[in-house]
Length: 322
Image 1 (tube, rainbow, N blue to C red):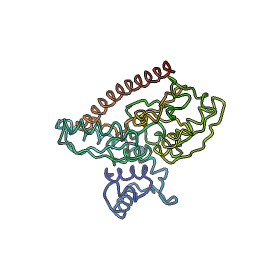
Image 2: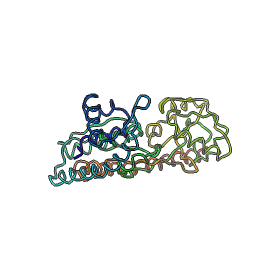
Image 3: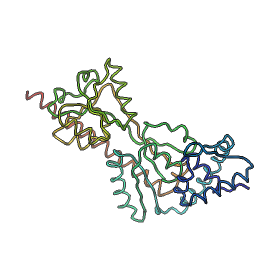
């Protein structure tokens, strides 16, 4: 009979790509993982993976075994979740990962709400970029991974369940004294003569912005290519450049009198999801985290609408007083 633990190791290898990463994920040594995978090959009578560059890749037999065993592992997860649900206690460890702008907005409030209601929870958090976070969820290194649609999840779709969380709209960010700062919204075409700052580490968003400019009939003149959002905003502060960023990352900038944050048109959005292994949402602790996240997002959306209304009112007052 095939060993479930060994099947799980092979599934993790399919996601993580190296034995070293699998060993780290399951708290075993590399030789121990290699030995268990070798036994699995003996049990199946097939070569399941082979070396490829610095990592390994599954053979066709390995890919087939991972695909077929996924249903079995999902069933085990569901059984474990049902057993936890029967106990009913909201307790134990829950590991959460998220990228920067979610980590500075939703996550702290989720922690505060949960620990106030369920002090027996053992919450853990790790900041990871969406691609890393997705792999961590598939490899069961985290229980809940907050990701966005900047990455392709097709390869892991059979392993994970995705639940929509939030739709984040992009905004133009400029110095408060910019000629367009008092507009209710700004067309991409109106920025054709501007100097641009772009966060080059966010390649998907960069491509989305550049494509929007191309559709408006021009190529943006990028004079500041930054490695992170903080550097991008500091360049905008000088008044020399403008940028377009997701609104979720702009809470501080929207409250800073040095900046004007204005919705961009046509509408540009990114969608945020929480990814988890199939069936784990039945665990009382996971269900509690998801409820808390829903509550925080609802409050945040209401606050954002209020902030936007205040900002529009201030811009209108500025127009009337000119």
